[in-house]
Length: 105
Image (cartoon, rainbow, N blue to C red; front, side):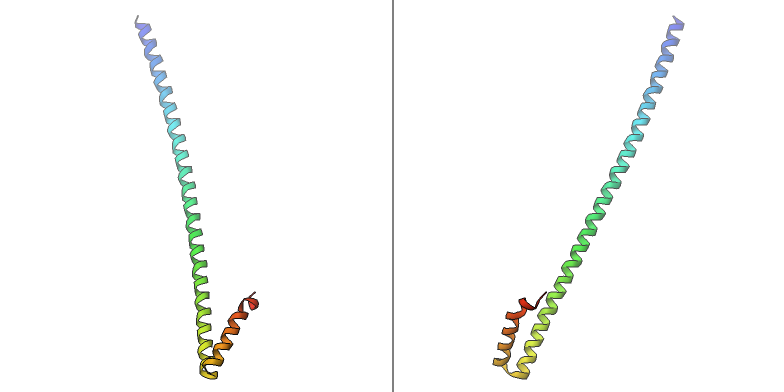
């Protein structure tokens, strides 16, 4: 009877050791998977941030270009009005604006 209980105790201890080893292995796999998932998430978020920054730069550049065109047109109109008179300048500006789409590349 004692030998049987000792055998059961050894079997139970062995089973516990196997369960602990399996739990440790599963914990290690979960840690690795979690780390990989977090790294992938960080990379995706970095790319999203880079894309947003690039888009904001492109938008800002376009806004500057639009403002520069508006300022140039206003300055040209003022210069023409000052030099040629309102009626003549207005006609020249209107013609230039009408021709603008043909002259843009």
